[in-house]
Length: 238
Image 1 (cartoon, helix red, strand yellow):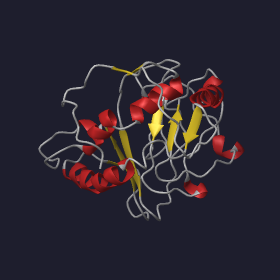
Image 2 (image 1 turned 120 degrees about the vertical axis):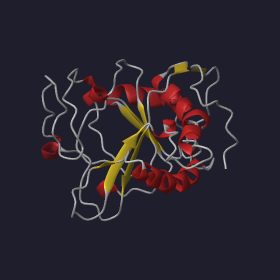
Image 3 (image 1 turned 180 degrees about the vertical axis):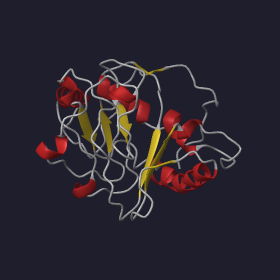
Image 4 (image 1 turned 120 degrees about the horizontal axis):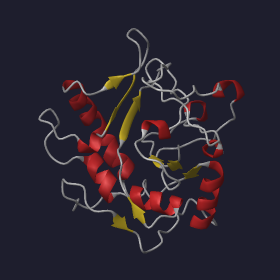
């Protein structure tokens, strides 16, 4: 498992990154300069292996996922996206790394350790070309086999309280994901200079109040996306 956490419960100061991180062995011939160029052009990059899998983070978080999910259910803190009576389950909750209520299991918070001790912050710094990384929040999505609900097309930025060019989400799947259900992006959409209304994943209704326009019908003019395996990390901007 990864080394023991040294970060205190309170958020530490922004972390400096003076040295370049090595690219994963699964990305031969690719440099961080290449990654940054791809990110600037497409608004998303996939780095297979992503410094996570070999270090044990995928297995480490996978063990914690079921434990945290049950605790969130007990505390009535989970948001369900699958209507009652539909097969499977799609649910989610934000700020899992900050949950320290009495309903949560005792001991370490592995999601907090992921935030502060894993390569996630390093990956965000390298992708955006930043020397400082500030953590905003985490979000745990759980979608069980047989679930028919899809994750609705959306922009991340309208859900955030921040703006900027050096902002990204780091996506880490804990299971291998087939092409038919993998995470997808519209390449270059971050350059549209348009912001669309954030929507509720459960029913697709926009959050109120909002004066932002609805997102175009992406599904009718979709492009194909590649596979994402467990341990592949993606950096995506809103």
